[in-house]
Amino acid sequence: MPWWGVASALLANVLYSTGFVLEKRALSALPALSTRQPARVVGHLLSSPLWLGGSLALAAGFAAQLAVYRTLPLAAAQGIFVSGLVLLLLLSSVVLGERTSGRERQSIVAILVALVLVVASLRGEDARAVARIAPPATLLVIAVPSLAAGLLLYRSAERRARRRHRLPTAGVPYGVAVGLLYGVSSLAIKGVSGLLTTHDVPAAAGQLFRSPYPYLLLFTGAAGLVLSQTALQRCRASVIVPVCTTVTCVFTVVCGTVAFGEPLPADPLRLALRLGGTAVAVTVLLALPRHDAPPVPRAPEALVPTSPEPPSPALRTNLPHTPRS
Image 1 (cartoon, rainbow, N blue to C red):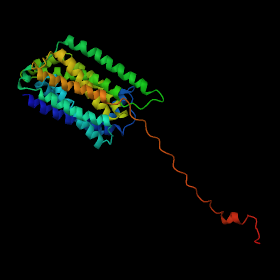
Image 2 (image 1 turned 45 degrees about the horizontal axis):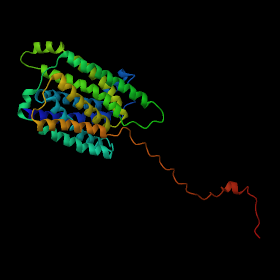
Image 3 (image 1 turned 120 degrees about the vertical axis):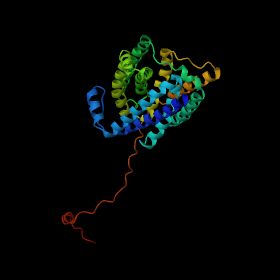
């Protein structure tokens, strides 16, 4: 039933947004993280109870996402996942005190429009069109170059960030790079959800570990943990997470539809609604600024003239005496 999938997707949005905000709050109290020391990054993260709470919320969102992919087509599921950006921007403003710009507030309206368009394209027969697995060769042809592109883009962003006299980055390159990794992870989650069954657990487990899905999840989970947390510590959550989510959504819709062979709606109106929602999601990514505004320098305090202090009594005794006329 698609509406169970919609409810699961909205629950996943709440869990993911809450988890990201808790992690961002925890990262502000941790030492500076560096991707050059991944073991140290993991050690710092595991030492923070608040960060562990955020990671548990993300894990619960992952479980809800598995239920979504069993009931909704990829294009519809990703369109609903993008709606979580609204809650994320609100939480980052209230909990983290991050001020959103005019463009970012406009993106909230655009995301709500995307959600309405995608949900309006759903019908009861969509559940029967949900694909379960993808050919391993097709999946790897998509996944391997995408992972390489994400890692190279992140490395390039790191190099540019080290240059002196640069405007502070808003985190868009980091978000795109991590979004590519999580896009591959999303395809792997889709594959795992298709292989999960309670009818023959040993056979399902054997089929799962013979597929590329768990190994893609392991790599994207480990690499995404270090890269995303380092970027999240440096940049605003209200920029990093929306960009990452939008890239993940578009990547999953385009590549996942090809890999899993899920058909788009045959009805022209429903097709226009679903594709229109995806197009609006892309608009959100393009509307976000690439750099934060430079900090405004504080004006120097006005100098208040002060009257000279009278000489001390000890000093007055040594001053020459001038007789009065």
